[in-house]
Every structure is written in C-alpha cells, then in structure tokens.
Length: 298
Image (cartoon, rainbow, N blue to C red):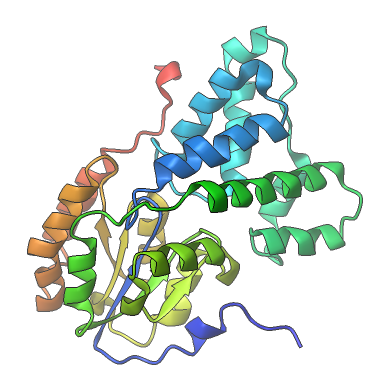
C-alpha cells in the first residue's frame, strides 16, 4: 500500500478559530543565503559543466533564487531558469559554452503526476528509464541535499520568530508550509526547538505550498482567519489561491518584518483588522524588494 505523504495535512483537526502557515527558509531561518551560495550553486556549476562560466552561473542563480520575484521557487524550475538566463547572456555566448537545454527536465516540471521532489523525480524516471539528463538531475539534486545536510546547521531563527510563535500557540493552529525537503525541515525545526509550536511540518514531498494550505485549512477556517507568512512571491500566490491573508517577510529586512509582526500585525490578524488597506500596504512594500529584471540587463 502506498502511503500518502500529505495525509497528516488531510487529517489536521482544528483546535482554534485561526490558522497560520509559515514558510521556513529565508522566512523563519536565515538559511537562504548559505543554502544557495554554498550548497545549490557550487553543485549547479559542478554537475552541469558550467565551470567555464561559473561567474555568470553564480550571478544568474543568485538572482533567480535570492534577489528576484522568483525567490523561493522550487529547485527544478529555478535550475531551468538559470540555464535560460545564461543562454541569452552575451558574455556567455561569446565564450561558446554549451548550456543545457534541459528538455527532459522541462518535461518533468510540466507534468503533474509526480511531485517536484527527489522521490518524484525517481518515480518519473521509472517511466523514462535511461534518460541521461534525468540521471544527471538526480545526481545533482542528491548532491545538493547531501551538501545542505553537511553544511547547514546552527542557523538560528530570526529575532522575534520564537516570540511570535509562542504568542500564537494558544490562539492559532500552525503548520510549516515549505518547498524544502521534509528531512531538512524536521532537522532545523527540532534543532532550534520550534517544532513544538506547529502541528505539521509540510515539505516538498507533500506537494506545492498552495496544496498544503488547501488540504490543511481551506473550508475549515473562515478566509480572514487564515494567514500565510512568507518571504517569497510563491508564498503570497499560495495564500491568494486559497483566499487567505498574507504577511510578507521582506528579504534583507527580515528582523524588522518579524518585529512588526510581533508588535503590530499579529494583533491585527486576531482582531480582524488585518485585511484590506493594511495588508495591501505591506504587500506593495514587499513587491518593491523583488525585481523581475536581472541587473546585467539594465
């Protein structure tokens, strides 16, 4: 019998009138920089033969994953986007370096039968045996996870995170909503004793973030009692797909964002005065942090 990875979300029973979903990397933990700059990007360069254009590969990957409106996107579309940015950059073209077209990876991304996780890729590969590009993709994503497990530890939550979770614990049901593999999430949330505040730690194996919110919250709480906290546009889209509210953690100003949440926004959420003009102002400020044009195109 196949076990549904998302069963814990389906089984979640409301204990409070309010629900809060919380992203992890870059939102609760200051881990986005170290994970991408020390784990993802070196393995992109190594496994996809980008050594001749490593400088430009690093710039493209940092833009996509950290400093643009695509921040927080799943690793597979992010990887393909890096390839596309490299292919159209004049500095790379002049070096006559072959950049992967990623046709097989794009097909994996475009299908919905298998989740965009390591296990999902293995399942997809069972129907596409012998595909060299998928085999390389599996080697890359496995190496990324191994490097994260080896490198990323001792990264504490941002100030005011713990205080916020503790304050909400008796008022809201809370879950982690993340595109990070579950094993890494479990490790981080338990390492810093934050797992005690949430009922489910949902990672990429349980589906997309919008699916997490749909399974756990939609139809069980009124829409103005559902809040998603995140640092990326994908978190906001997941919230809006479920008619939920969104509180942004601004990249580069995470501590100030959490302090504002703890001292101001949290009370507004529970008082029913968060939606409308207040939320719209926060979102407008958030969107200004994340451009859609890379600096080398300006």
